[in-house]
Image (cartoon, rainbow, N blue to C red; front, top):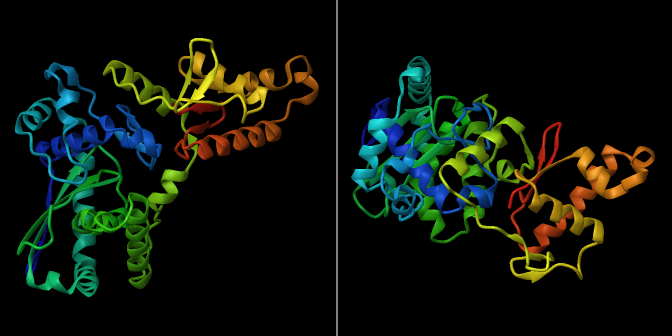
Length: 347
């Protein structure tokens, strides 16, 4: 759909899903999802902002797949054609054909209704864009996060190409955020941290939605990252997917040869209560590292569990433990709440 020198084209090909999967695999193997609390899985939990969808294929059929894809530079265009061909040949889009078509029609209609306003807003932010030819390809896909993107290496060129990956459950608000992101993300990272960059993009999106009276619920990326609750079925699927592909995240917490707790190589005995160390040790010896409320209560109160059991007390104790882990340098999502079950140590 053309607007002078600003073009947005929608695409539903398998190639687009291969691109989106390539990008997501790169982020996964480089630890981005583990650090920020996103959950990679082969089962779809559409509507879940923390879920990252991966095609259920045998990635290790491609020799050294995960090692090769680790070279991918975040936010840029996928370049290894052999990896792209491998993914494109194995991804099955047929179960999602109807939803892909519906999402394309929905987003095309939405873009047509707001394109003039969006372009005007972008030109106001970056007047130099008016003198450039900008082309954005929007690939509709059942995989990845709700909204993904690949950015041009430089905004100085006269011709600027960018990709946006729109998952089939992407709302209008995330589409706006993805358009801003695929043009500005890499540029902003030259000056700001990832968190600061995301906060800026969140602000631009919220401001645009408000100024144009667009009624679409928007969940800021920073708010998503800080969310500490997780769906149990999603978590178990994720752990199975990681195990099948022999992908083990970097461990923040470990037990040394004497069974003592260490965090990033530092001894924790002087800074943690004995009950907290017991909880952490139990997490590390369980597979998967999930403790139910009853498990936690048993560690905290032992024979007095019947008299002292309190979900409120457990949640307060785990919140304090989470804050201590964050102070050690662990990500905010190091300790996740598993809805209606207990807690998971994202180690």
